[in-house]
Image (cartoon, rainbow, N blue to C red; front, side):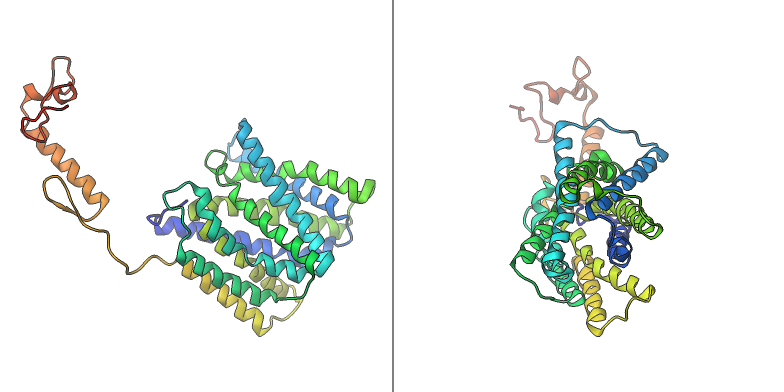
Length: 364
């Protein structure tokens, strides 16, 4: 996970990519009507097939070769694709059928809190406990997303499917973390999209039979193409390129941009006028994100530590500089005969040699 010492430029660039990626995902609702008559699972299979082709072409254009996957990487990618893409879509579809789309959107608004709590456990970094500030920011974002989406109404099946979608949404990020350092954002996006295609074809064959695929109309082709290129290829790349730099806990805050993307797109396309709750929810989401990204202020400064010579070191950088200066002083005053042994190795590397840091004490 990105440490608090990350440069402002690096963090700002990652935040911009995460914002754009989640905003683009939010525009999906505006084109959903274009493909409402196309078989769902066949359409999703087409979506991910086109996205994989676009991403692999982009990888080739950037000079990225296809890497041989280890067994562990293949298992992680398969799990990522199955949960974060395939099962996620199944849960959303079934939740909408059972209780309408609003309930699923409301439950997914809790994704920032889930990632804020679980993210540190998946990073392998020194800080395994959730940051109280990030958790508080995630709660603010969740409140804003809920206000913008609305509480809606539902039933138990709809709630259970929505909770399944929430779990898959978290796994979409958490399972990618160990893959991104070696594979990179383009390959992870391309491989996971490609692996989703056979899964969706199998589900489509079971649910819709041979009618799961047909030649799309012009409007359907436009909708599937937008989903594939913009909502999948572009958004996946933006998200996965930002995720390692922000860390999953801070990156999760940007999930609140999804309802904002839906809101803005609806206004631009003339599909509706935002209500005061919509605008207020969007403002709360932005406030929560800014709270989570704000640098730490106040608090107790790092405790000063004396070095071996009694100097007070106020930071690790100062400590490193002090060690360099001490080493230079020792080299300057150490006699040449003591500095090099018979074989050209410094004499204090020989067992029983003199430790010049502490007078004539013998090194054990």
